[in-house]
Image (tube, rainbow, N blue to C red; front, side, top):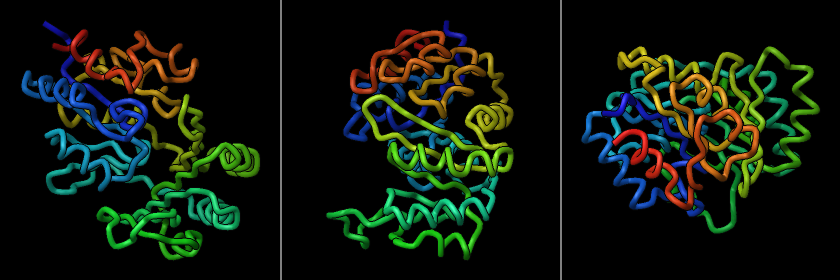
Length: 266
């Protein structure tokens, strides 16, 4: 009998494949774990409504860890167990630079996430809570954000060099360089993190961290992999993430989540 009572899963690059879908094998493995009484928690840089859609698809009803650990929220009723907001001055400066550069940016303010327009997007067909904004600094001026997520190697390098020294200690700068995916940086409250958010969820569900299997693929997952009883990195992770894990699973395109669940849980 497995000693794992809870599975914490990152989404992009881990549970989701390169087509940003959950494979049939991964979905079936998650369902079998749930049927066996194991809790499954999604821990993602994504915003709440997008994470909630993934949870509903998989039949997951545990609290969701969103915005890289800045938000912990129950999907049944929207009750927040945690909501940490980002330094507004930093958010204004970063989004103003991103507006100027035209970087791909997602700014979450309460239940709305603002994104820059992409070719082929029909704004009226965007998922609930996602809106187009070409001037995200203006949105930040009207409301304190939870997180700012910016994609691109240039953006990661410039933001870390320009803002990290000035705002050190006032925000968390999660710099991520996943293999085969765009680099990105997530700015959140300094106390936000997947590991601390996972501890809140574990306390809520009365499951010790020693009985948690956590899986991820990027630098944002490092603290979660180290704190869980069983930390597993998928094989498409950077070397730093692999070194922090106890085991290496197949890649996200080779159903690494299913492999880990079948091997260590079921």
